[in-house]
Length: 326
Image (cartoon, rainbow, N blue to C red; front, side, top):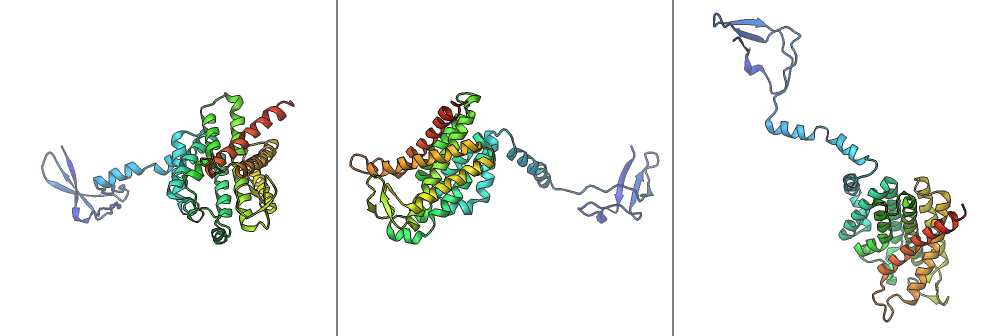
């Protein structure tokens, strides 16, 4: 059989190039056994690049990777895989910001919250939680030196740990799980979403009112007796903190409305439920928190009670008032 060989071989580089007229192909004839030179036409195609086996394996594995990742991140409805991938991507990019407001263990707890939120309520729900985190972290660090001097600052320079994350998101996580597993069927999917939004409106309002009150409150009153008490006292409220807390709840419910998480009436429900829950939380703090016989009732447990009350109130308002009037 006739064979083709390129002469001279030394002129071929490891990278692909176009053969020119000076390249010669030797044609070995099966009849004579001699090598006859043939000039290569200018139209000869490009010689494939020489790639090592390791490079070939790497290229084949990476081909299509960015497209596959984007497809996974944009998966709708969300899956567990897309939820984990989205959170890994966001947490990797946002780790400097996250670590400014969370301890390492707190960040791990926040990751689990993020996965549950994305799986249940996709990107809009995640953005709601992200808004809560950014605003909450900002107000926690306001006048942090003054708060530390008064002994009312959050531990670790305002970086919250897993207990705080769980205490702030327990109700939201419960709503996410109820939504993921379609508890109550499609008729309740909107209810779980409303309760989820209400829980974070309640917690952000509580955080902002507390931190603004400690930083800027002129006079703090114990909610059970209305006596003047030092700033940062459990169960104490201030005018400045109360107004800031209401505005924070309005902000987060408005964000939820524009992201399509709730309707306008439901946004109003979230604001009202959050304020009632926060008044209840202040009474619990003033009357029972860490008192004799209630040492187990620490700030994280009170937070769980607070956001649970806010969620339940929002659901009851929706079912009894709005749905009952239809």
